[in-house]
Image (cartoon, rainbow, N blue to C red; front, top):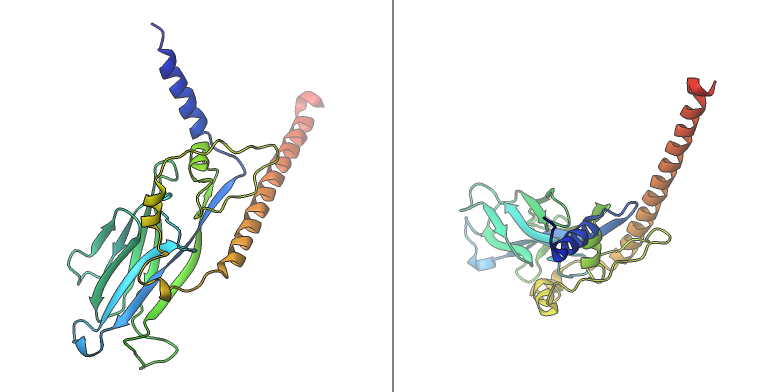
Length: 250
């Protein structure tokens, strides 16, 4: 019994989209950290600060194109210390008096990566440069810049994110052409997911130095692609040497 032609085409299309792209990397610049406001006269021994922990795009773009959900593991003294954020923006706000380490686990969409990424951030409530000085007007902001690198992405993943502003596309191998872009999201949804209009955005650290970091990231990708190419050439040379040394060639 033959399979319907439509099902065959769907299978072939799925195989193409799942095909891994050798010597290609996609990177997503991210920033994670916290902002803490002293409550001033409203503070008490249990709640001296209101704070927000978050993961955002380095230029405040929506990360929902790659990240499916984020899990923040708070101190065990909090009610429901495991907080799951199912949609961007990936942030949560709380109030308290103590500093502690927060584990952040990022889960990705199925076509991106099947392994979660673990990050760690030490919640800061008090300024380090001015110990003992707190202000209700100026929050404490502690952020870290990083990039999530996805080696050998699938064609489907690349097609889905190639025009998204949160994504840093690599220099593609010679002769490679991008797959046609896939329109899978509503731009208004992306707008809701970004952090450009976030009430806390005025306090975010400016990562237009991140432009330099992005350039470094792109350079890093080129170097890694070149290393991969050299490894293949060395492997080929070693294979030829083994062939020449084999007894049949003596």
